[in-house]
Image (cartoon, one colour):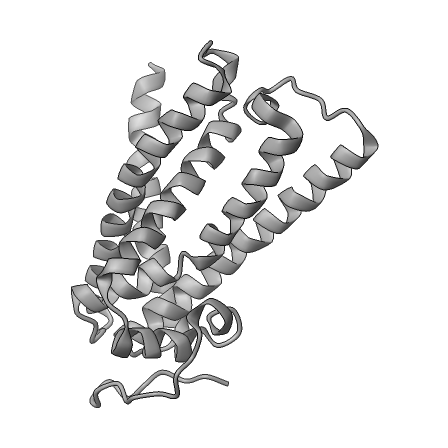
Length: 216
């Protein structure tokens, strides 16, 4: 069982690892290695790719082509433009919350360390882009329409498997993010979970009055 590093001691050098492989099963060990050996350059790329994936998810969830007559090529172009921007902004915002709230629990991370940790936690979201390519090959613009029905039985199986894997990857992302925040702050995974849940709860509480006001 992985345990948090001693908050009073600097993170020790670790055996070289391949983050793309080990982060799935040894997230704390992998994050510790990343904090010791990786730089922010590649972290930007990970956040950009995750942002593109999230933009595709949102466009599909909202069935944007129901009300926009722009076609699939223009939609994908918009995704490639908007995705990186939203990915970077979301990365900075998530990092700020994880770093700031973690300080309440006496976390030891610097903001730069947390930037690295939250960026590399995006690996499952980056991998999910592969399955988006598969979805687009099977459904085309139907992936962004509410009334689209998948045709052949084989296509239905492909879409079901792709959607299931993407859902699993999303859950794995949150699991890795909790571990990444915990290891970077050098405290327990339970505190890492609280560090991420508290901002979410506060934002929800703030959002409810705004939603109620908008209804009247």
